[in-house]
Length: 560
Image 1: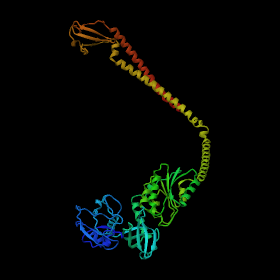
Image 2 (image 1 turned 135 degrees about the vertical axis):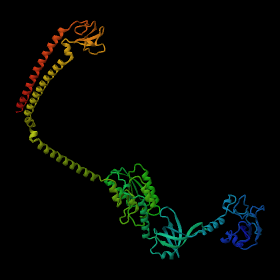
Image 3 (image 1 turned 180 degrees about the horizontal axis):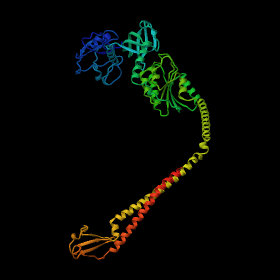
Image 4 (image 1 turned 180 degrees about the vertical axis):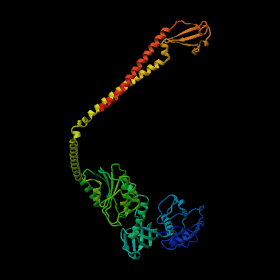
């Protein structure tokens, strides 16, 4: 009995697909299928037969209508999807099916899109994309008939695209194309619905030569230099004796062996923290940048070495990548670049704190040679000992020279010459001072005697008295007082109170009554004493004048 196959295809009355085509899926004419009016009601087409045209029944079913949907084709047992039992006769009866959602947002687990419905939509969307120029590195290049298949990989990140290029387009390039070459292709994206693959069909290819790469590197070099990443003041000095050295090198190569063996031969106690990465190709930039960041974050690492055993210009392009250069500039640990390329210096050499020509040279720069340091220490000690011996000998000679001078051999000689003169001067000064003192003493005594003789107190001492009114006014004339006036009489030692009793008629004086009595005798004795004192002062002054005359002669004789 022939097997009856029932398939429902969601189409519109405008679609002119045949039952034989629609039995495999929706309308294959993408342009007509995409131009269907979403507002038109879909039509359920039921096809009977095995790859042959059969009776076709069409019945419009509005979206969201209440009509009972026909059964869908057998896709496995499901409670929502009734299946046709095996062996059912193919009578060509129409089976009602549920309409598919029009939008992807309307799909659910119960109402999904079949692959045959989604794949053409993706293909049509990608087909509407315009062609684009893409640059990358060639990998896995192979040729089949008139087409070349290759993988175009990004130079910085691990991303790639599949590209098909006409063999004639590659043959017309200025140079050969192989794995690692840089190409710029003009390609249009294509989606293969059968396998779900996305490829790019190229129609034009440009080979990126060394000149253009160098121009790009020079431009980047100018930009980074303007930012100050290559300034000398950013360079940090390397530690004299690092305990731990961070090493970024290839997974397989001689760079690691050169650095480690030479460094430990020079200083056996040095330790290494090694990060093995890819040093060429698209993965080089992210892996090297990550390794530098990890070693920089390790507090034990005192210096970081990025080593590579040379290579072609294309192999060293990752070390001129902007992302890698900026990662190296952000490293706070001193960085040594040992790429080992003499002709073209990568930008990493310019941003590093120290550039080594080879990995071996880097090992010599980061650690000192123990044998050489010991020899230098021995040499420095010998030089220091010789310099100290010479300095002591020179100072001893100078000291002996100064000690042989007469002034230091017998220092008292110079003092003895001036000792006698100093004694004469001291004696002369002492006599002159004595003479001056004696003369001045005599002058002072004479002046004191004169002052004492002229003083009112001396007059009082001789027995005279001073009569004063109570207000302190001196009475010089008897007419200045009247009887019963109180008076005050000042004597040499003390004073008396007196009062006028009567007026004398003959002499014009008033009798004064005092408590002390008359002092005439004392006045007379005081007068005699004053005269004797004056005579003594005059004799003293004469003696002083004779001493003044004799003093200079003695001083002069002393000097002679």
